[in-house]
Amino acid sequence: MVIFLLAITSFTVILDFMIMSPLGDMLMKSMNLTTSKFGFAVSAYAFSAGISGLLTAGFADRYDRKKLLLFFYTGFIGGTVFCGLAHTYPLLLAARIITGIFGGVIGSISMAIIADIFPLQQRGRVIGFVQMGFGASQVLGIPIGLYIANHWGWQAPFLMVAGLAAIIAVLILAQLKPLTAHLAVQSDRSPFQHLYHTVAKRNYRIGFLATALMSIGGFMMMPFGSAYAINNLKVTNEQLPLLFMVGGVSSLFIMPLVGKLSDKVDKFKLFVVATIWMMILVIIYTHLKSAPFGLIIVFNVLMMMGIMSRMIPSTALVSAIPEMSDRGAFMSINASLQQIAGGVAAAIAGMIVVQTDRFSPLQHYDTLGYVVVAVSLLCIFLLWRVKKVVASKPATKPPIPIVEEAIIGESGFGELEEKLTT
Image (cartoon, rainbow, N blue to C red; front, side, top):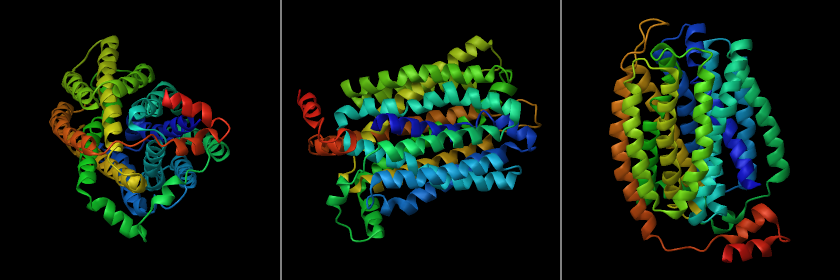
């Protein structure tokens, strides 16, 4: 139940962010936006999410994680409704900032819950299932969102996301049990002292830097993906939902498989293989001039395989760095830097990519591919350092009492304990 609730919560948050990319061409044409303005609209969410995460990091380990999740998820719903009501560029910017303030923290709370409940040996497959929200957003959310946008305008998909999220918030309130075990191991007297102690730890900073650079590589191509497909690869507006849907379907199959694989093989080696695969496909895809639609789908799926396959082992490794007493703050800061780095990447991409008019091909998109490759090489080195940090930590027992509290209650605990022991 915990995995399901976190997965569908992740689905709505990711969809809210991801829908900006396929709506990019529609937004730029309807509001007469330049590529730099649209890039800033995308990065506004990321910057506000990053700042919010830093401001709330000191408080992240001082409250029941369920209450914290519900608070920020409610704010996220309100911000998404505001996006659906915006009709001008300044209002859209304001709405994205509000949504980012609340939505950007949700992922870190979810990761803290996962790290509290599941040991590292099981964390890869759990993260794989939770991050299926990314694939589900492409399979269901983005095609449906584009269909709705084509009929009722670009604001309608945001209202759809807000309505779905409201239902999920009720489920979280009713089904998720309190998560308070981390409160018993707090030593810092104030939130600011807790924030300082978390940032001051050298091993933690290695994880922060690795996550930030991986986000730069991941976010840089995303904002202009639909505009590149339509204006450079000659994909039609009718074909665009199918392109996203096929990529999403592949993710739904890839994520659980990679999650299980990352629990059986060395997570760092899996990350390296996936990164090299991704770099090769990024160079090929960003240099396409025009190609049959079927070939574009194939390259897009192969590139998504690399991107998705490196996310799971890297996230699992980084999640093993913090101690239980610091997990909320660590995950919050980590998510903040991830969002800020993504915002920087989107803003830089908006300055690199040029479009002379609303219907002309994007220029210098291939340059983004080279930048992504360079950043990805640096990520391999940083994750190697993360692996060394995790390997130096003493082994810990699976947090069975927290599993009992969060998932099944006392009545079914004996059966679960027997299975874990086996």
